[in-house]
Amino acid sequence: MFDRNSAHLSDEQLADGGNSPHLLSCAECRRRVDEFRAAAAAYVEYRDAIRGPMLPPPPESWDSLRVLVAQHEAAAPPKRSYRWPALLIAAACAAMAGTLAYRLVEHPSPRGARAISHAAPIPSAPSAAVPAREMPVVHEPESESPVGPEDMLRVFRALDEIGADVGEPLDVSEDSAHRFVVVRAVGLPATRRQEVADALQPLPRVSLIWDAGNSGRVSTQTSSSEQISTNVPDGVRRQLEDSLGGAIGRQEVTDRVLETSAAALARAYAVRVLADKFPPETEARLADKDREVLRGLVGRHLSELDRLAARIRTELKMLLPTSDGFASGNSENQMASWQSGAVTLVSAARENDTLLNRLLAGTYSQAEGDEMLASLGAHIRKLETTVRAEQQGGQ
Image (cartoon, rainbow, N blue to C red; front, side, top):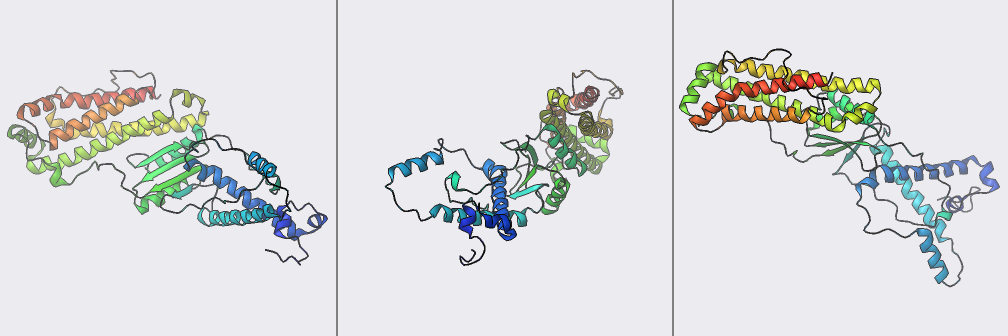
């Protein structure tokens, strides 16, 4: 607080508006006014962009502050003013300056990814409230247009470049006010968190939220001792070992096939996520270059999924009938668009994964084992066919 005997205006005088000849001629007082306004603008941005979306709506609408003040003044007997509004304004400006300092330390790059930790305390908003007419002039930041699909597409492209858009516990969405693309990460190790943060840092209007808890996802890979089932019927076990190179060969093929199938299922889910975020009508609104980026992401997932399906067929070819094969370019179901086939793609990958896990590492009867062996080729062929149909729909 400035000394009242100083040649400069006091904080109370500046809070009252500072419309005086002194302010016009004093660079120091104008600088202090600018600092107050910058602190207020920073708090408004924090309130609207970060704090506001995290708060539940009020149980009922709030009365206007102007109305409450007018009712209070009308009911109160006339008395001498002691300039309390100005003191409250000074306190609010000090609190907002603290908020600005917090943001400069915790978020040094406001245009980049905004990292918000649920475990970290969030600074509380100033509690001082004064009539609007007593506030110094504060220029509200210009309202930003809502985030669009191109903003979300940039996030997916950045995640794809580090392989974080497949099988990672990440959720990409928009905040309730449609001002930011929100990326929520659950249970990522510190090294991976840093990689994700570095990938998203250059992007504007991205809010990155960490959650250190368990992601809740069950690992798709198990140890070798767990992937071999001792409850496989003797007839199926002998057939598996004869076809796959004995007990050790069966173990090695089981490990590779189940790992490959899990990766294929993750790719199928990645395609479905993109289909949900970018349905045909949304894709049609994208600029040509953005549409090419989207098709490139989908194409890479489908190409890798096609490779994984072919690897499963190669690993298990000795269990398949010699007549069972997949002709290149064959497609049983032509998709109207790649989005329309995403659900079918996930279903085919999931059914294939379920069958492989049960056949190679499950518990079942001899009759059930014979049935699974007989349908194995059809499941693999369905996955391959669905992938090719999706690729054609994405062209």
